[in-house]
Length: 135
Image 1 (cartoon, rainbow, N blue to C red):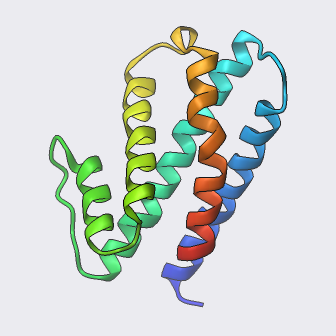
Image 2: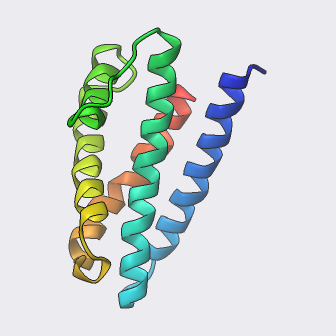
């Protein structure tokens, strides 16, 4: 295996482990305040992992993304343009990116369980499908 494939494999394993933690939280009927904060952090981590894989795959294609004010969105746009993600995946990942931005710049106690569940429910399948097809 190459260093690149080792990197993607390790990142994929981290994402899969994180999606398992998300799924375990979603099985609970009601989350504590700390579990809501944890769910927000896990969603942030999952998106960051997906972004790392996409950036690596773009790099392999000699597509460099400059770190501008919208570079995170540019990674997704480039990944869609390169058919690394479908339009449906693009939209779902974009929602996670927007959430991640709010999560990073906000306070954990302000997260709403219902909104997190709306993001998390499809995120587990989305990430696992992405990894199955791309990693």
